[in-house]
Picture 1 (cartoon, rainbow, N blue to C red):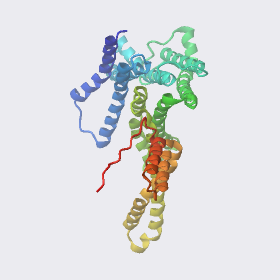
Picture 2 (cartoon, rainbow, N blue to C red):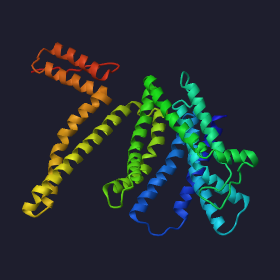
Picture 3 (cartoon, rainbow, N blue to C red):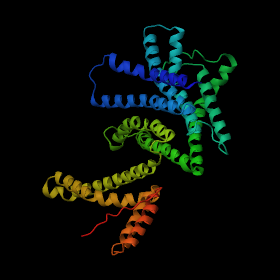
Picture 4 (cartoon, one colour):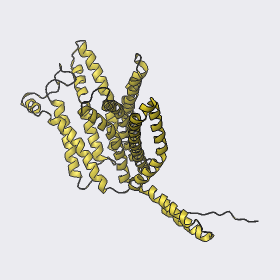
Length: 405
C-alpha cells in the first residue's frame, strides 16, 4: 500500500471516530449539567478521542506497525457502539424492528469483545507490531487464537442480547451448533478475559529478558498499567466490601470511578510515546517521581490522620475548638513535607532511577574531594572524570577564563 493511501485510510478512520463526537458536542442540544456531570463527560470525551488520535500518529509515522491501526479501530468501535445503541434503543422504543435495527443492537453487544481482542493483540505485538520470536511466540499465538475464538462464540451465541432483553441475537447460530454455543455459558467471556490477562503476563516475561530501547518501551506500558491499577483497586474495594453511602470507602469508590476515566487514556498515550520513542528514556524519572510522591502522600496522610485524631481527642476538649487541631495537623504536615520528600525520593531513586542516584553520589563525592583542592590541573582532571561518570557525554570541553592583573 502506498504511503498516500495509508495516510488517507488513517485519516478516514480518525474522522470516523472524531467526527460524530464533535458533531454531538456542537449540534446536539443539552440541558444544564452539574459539575460532576461536566467532569465525567470531559473525562469520557478524553477517553474516546485518545485512542484514535494516538493511533493516527502511529499509523502515519510507523505505517507498518499494526498497533496504530488497532487503536484507530478501537476508537471507531467506541463511537460506533454509542451510535448503534442510540439508534437501536430509539427505534425499538417506537416499535420499529428492521434487520438494520437488530444488527445495530447486536453490534452494541460486541464493544467489549472488540476492545478485548484489540488490546490483546496490542499487548502481544508491542512495541514492534509483530509477534516476538523465542519462547513467548507459541503462547502468544495460542493467546491470540483464544481471544478470536471467544469473540466468534460471543457473536453467534443465540438468545436475548444483554442491553436489549427483548431482542434475540440476529446472528445466533441455528440448530445443534447454537445449542452447543449456548451450553458453553461463560466460556466465550472467560476466553476473552483470560487471553487479555495472559497477554499481560507475557509482557512481564518479555520485560525480564528485554534490553535497551525495548526495555524502556515496556516500562512506559508498565507505567500506564500501574496508574490504571490505582482506580481499579479503589473500585474493587468499594464494590466487594459493599460499603454504605457516606463512608470513606464509598467516597474512595466514587473518586476511583472518575479516576478510571482519567487513567484509561494514559494507556494509549504511553503506547504512542514508546513506539514513537519520544522522550523514551525519561520514563525512569517519571516512574521514580510518581512512586516517590505517592509514598510521600501516603506517609503524610497517615501523619495528618494520626495527629488530627490525637489532638481532637486530647486538646480540643480543653480549648473547646476542633479547628485548632486541624490547623496544627496541617502545619505539622507542611513542616514534614520537604524532609520526608527528600529522604523518600533518595530511596526510590536508588531502586527505580539508578542513573540519577549514581549521578548525585558522584557529584557529592567530587565536592567533598575538592573542597580544599587548589591545584588547577588536578581540579580540571577531577571535573572531567566526574562529568564523564555522571552523564556520559560524547565529548567534554573545559574553558578557563584567562587573565590577571
